Image (cartoon, rainbow, N blue to C red; front, side, top):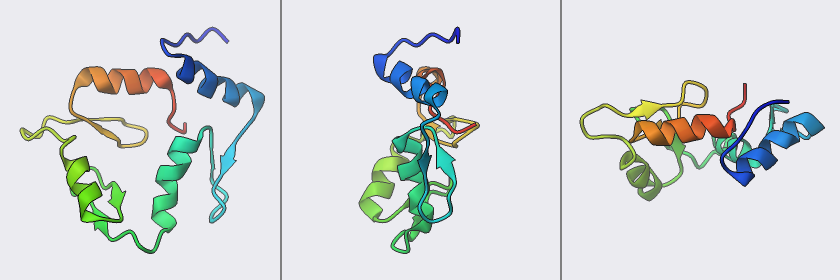
Length: 106
């Protein structure tokens, strides 16, 4: 295809989609194009997950992880979110890089 990437990792991840390599969830059989989104998805099946971010609904198993996550949100409420995976970004540039990596399940 004609897609271009600024990072080698992004290209490698994208090439997996052409090779048909998928990473399935063992709990619900939902498939992902890379391990990162699968790891995040697995949290919904984890019974130890008890904490939710009020701003983006991300799930966390400890208050320390939630606290670190909350630092990503801009205090003024102007956080940027990926429309596909709802991952928050404190800067527009970080969101743009995330989108260029094309790692979200479509």
